[in-house]
Amino acid sequence: MLDTRKVKRLGVSVPTIYAERIREILVKRSAIEPSLKPLRTGDKVVFPLKPDILQAEEIVPPDLGCQLVWEEFQERRTTPRSIREALAGLVRDELLEKLPSSYDIVGDIAVVHIPEGLEQLGEQIGEAIIRVNPSVKVVLGEAGPVEGVYRTRRLVHLAGEARTFTAHKEHGCVFHVDLEKVYFNPRLAGERMRIAGLTRSDEVVADMFAGVGPFAVAIAKHAGARVYASEINPEAYDLLVKNIQVNRLTGRVVPLFGDCRTTFSNNQVTADRVVMNYPSDPFSFLDTALKILRGRGVIHLYGFAEDTEEWRSKILERLTELGASCDIMVKRLKPVSPSRSLMVADIEVRSSRPARTS
Ligand SMILES: C[S@@+](CC[C@H](N)C(=O)[O-])C[C@H]1O[C@@H](n2cnc3c(N)ncnc32)[C@H](O)[C@@H]1O
Image (cartoon, rainbow, N blue to C red; front, top):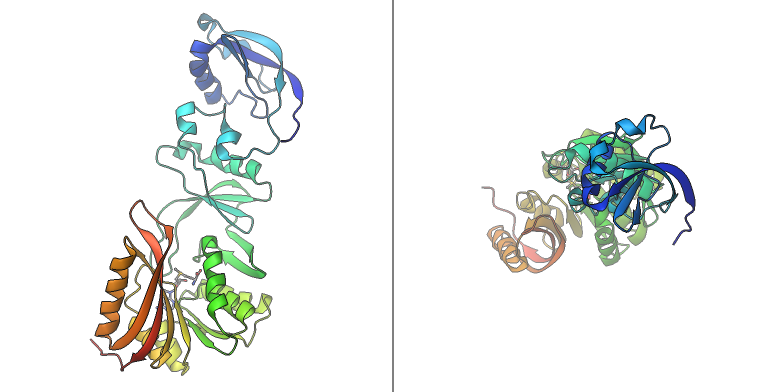
């Protein structure tokens, strides 16, 4: 707990039964001092006013038993622990309940989902996040789903500096990203380390959907393997090239620009392990993965599903159609909606015949 001091300030004293009504009036006028805690004494609540509020008597209705009083108010903790704590007393109680309790941090940018009905609080939520995490310099709000081939989403600026690019550090790697132009998910850091931990240094790995290179770079850096990384989005490809350089992996990670259905075959790449992080369409590219493995090896396939066993059966069915015999282990990684989760299947391909073209 941080020590807090008391500060003398003009406040509005109001009978507790009218406190909520008066608070709404004061919040609308941006009159409450956010760094001070309202005072509760018996049947009264006293809201601290900002020092620049002139003619405070005009703000409060005289008929609800309100009075202007000088009081000593306790300062709030300088660093609140949550958005809710940062905005307590500044927004209505029923809205406090709905405030987001989590958000992603990529480098010095926070990305938050603003729940429906709280859109008008976007800026306040953004500023609260910066108060909670002083190292956050930009707050962006999600303004749509992850969509399209590039898997990007619309973002809106909520607080802090106006930019969408940053550098994210993760397990000894650095990733330059531009969140408006490329996909990046900091929540997969542990998964990247898991795959790196499974990879031997003498393996060749194919990252079919490389993005800015988080899997490719982590695997090359931590496992020492050679990685071919294919990416179709030109902005993500440029950042992939940059990330290979800044992580000193030139030559160990080979960037391939374009559609993975042709980049690996054009460069005659054969791999022992394939990473397929394209969960929105996991099955359309399995035939390409089998071709890259040329008979045997491991595929890490990501996808969205409700049930691990059901998803395992679907993968088995598809791979059997493609003429592969394999062992499949499925793991649930994180929920993406009340019923669906991001899953990963570790697929050990024992043999496969050349894929049918259909
Ligand atoms: C879900 S993102 C994953 C990116 C990266 N693996 C990561 O974990 O951050 C999928 C990526 O695949 C790329 N992509 C989509 N279709 C592709 C294709 N046919 N060939 C190569 N890359 C593709 C998208 O542009 C996007 O960057």
